[in-house]
Length: 289
Image 1 (cartoon, rainbow, N blue to C red):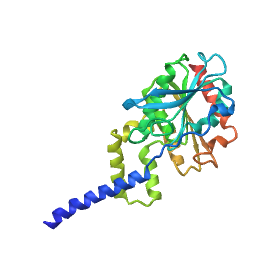
Image 2 (tube, rainbow, N blue to C red):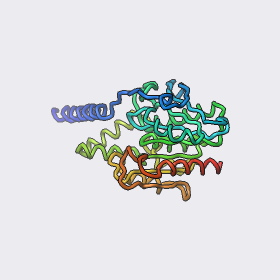
Image 3 (cartoon, rainbow, N blue to C red):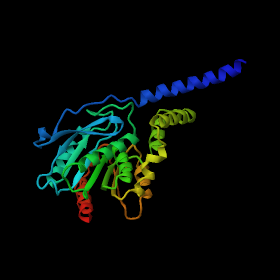
């Protein structure tokens, strides 16, 4: 009799323990930007637009230097626990090349609305909302690109599979599969396999969508877009094998893969030739359009 009571009790305690650990590990406190394009001499417009669950996203719209209605548009997507201020260095480099730019805060980040929890899936749906917003403005609908960092790149890959308007995607340090990245993090914390399984299950239930549905490795080949996948070979947050998996999952000729020796998760943009390669990729893809 005691055993029948003890076993369910132990299981409940395990669930509660893993839930506590999950909340602790993935807790997010939105950090708002401290800098703006204006401080760098760039005119911009603060915008808000709708995403799912009746939530609103905050963003910066930076029009092209000339002929904004004919210029290509690039949506810029930050990573986990960051905000659109992370994209200022990209704005500074891309704006003089005559792109319209939209940087925005994903749900539960920066100045955008909270929505219970953040996830790779929600990043992807928010990229979709951002692209739909750009299409509501007077821009060329056939020249839309996305540049995403880390989980922002993963979300951008998923978005490209469900938004045909996206023609070109650059990812920097993006995961190929959410489970791979979480497993890597769990191993760093020496979490036993059974607890890892419980945590992964709880997160998947909370997201409400199977990992396989939005995993970039399962979506890159579905997208009409071309990809430039950039990954630092010293990346210990999202291992370099993730970039390799993304490249391998793409259709023949769909993806350019650039592994950068000596770079980690957040410093690929310091590599000589980085900006030139990104610029060339976008210009080439938009000329095709």
